Length: 279
Image (cartoon, rainbow, N blue to C red; front, top):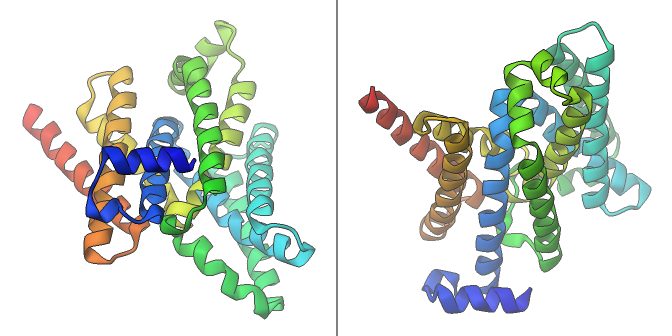
């Protein structure tokens, strides 16, 4: 990892990238933002923004359980988030309720459990600032390896399943008739999305992680003329916003995650203007 960071410094010899932690942040944000954009295409196609919110808010309970049980909160947070994601998808498929209703129940449950634990154990509340706001400047080499492994998994999933997921979003019965099993693909997508949301909390925090999924994909939809273009434009917007946001946060001394999201929102507004002009 140090060799890769040194290579970034040699290729991009800018003053603001001289500190090693800034190069880690650049690499981390450049990996996380496009990964979120890729998964965000399906988030907006399946209208699952509320699902990602429920997963991100489960971080409270995951971290609290880790602290109480004496385990690494990072791993308990990820494990609990994946458990909640699987629970939502399984319950939504079995229950005769709308998916957003099921998500709402799980959302309320995980937040309530987390708040109960935190209020009962007041000494652990100081650990939650990082979950709320994130701090990509504090990521470690271990975090980067985890991000890289997850990005590889997302690349494989999108390569195998992008068209299948697109057909499921458009017409699930037709997809099923072509041999695509909705339950399997939805569960695989839900697990990967839950992992991505939990890892992305490190970068932008609980309050903004859904924006990292939705904003680049929404901007890509404004620009693209087809499904393939949507995917690639979302990646481009995410990559630009990650680099621009990191640089501006260095110049302004602002929160890095929030500045990356703000850069993405500006690009979304510009893409919307482009869409109006194209009409």
